[in-house]
Length: 305
Image 1 (spheres, rainbow, N blue to C red):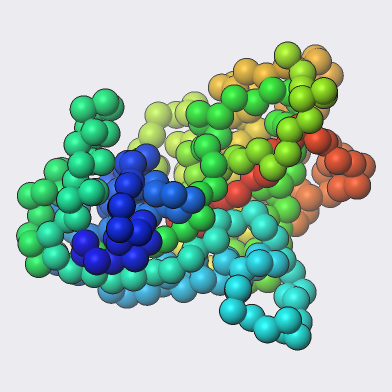
Image 2 (cartoon, helix red, strand yellow):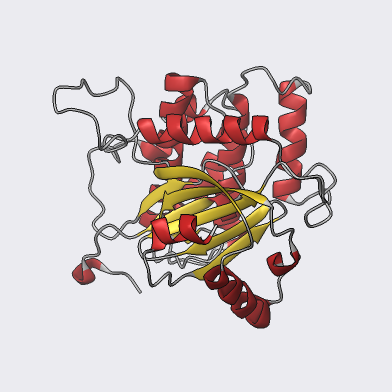
């Protein structure tokens, strides 16, 4: 495992743990994020069975397909290769997927301990894992800060966030019948592409009434429990949820009519059948050709930890 990590972080191997989930850990290196997931073993990890090879293979395939939707997704493609009919920069680029075995790399253990001392990890200490444990490593671009933690500075940024998420989902719907199905605000990453300082303004058992929990239940109703079938309505439900997050949990300068516009979008999003339909919402009229210099670029994690 140590050799695999050095492949992505270099000899210095400087990393910082930035997040965790039931199935794995996320570490940040120089311009890269490593998602490390134990796989294929019999032992429970964080109280849950380890992900099997078939599920890992499916996740890797999805990551590759979403990366291919980017105009810069395949750096090995020849200049004569035709651009895809549908493309978007809205999904995180997966640089590589690797499988490795062995004790947890020392640099990762140091980063894990530092995170635990600062924030108290809910996961088991990887130092206690089997020394022959298998892992899959997803090496991805650093997509920025998640929507839960980012500070929005204006209505334009809030609207831009909703628009760029909608565009990414709509493109993926058309290109590959894609549904995210877990697009909570921790899975939406924002990165400032350009900032003009002159224009800078000053799962199903969750509680009822909690928008994220309600969204999972609404997905179940929309799909009729047939999760294997394509149901782009689920993407529209997550747009409804994100609009609710912006209104209820994010503070940013906005006039009353601007907040009313987001509220109206939230209501309409609930009725849309897909992100492609939501893309033509009244709130986005004229935004396609208007450049907001102080707005960030939105990217989406293709899969939660």
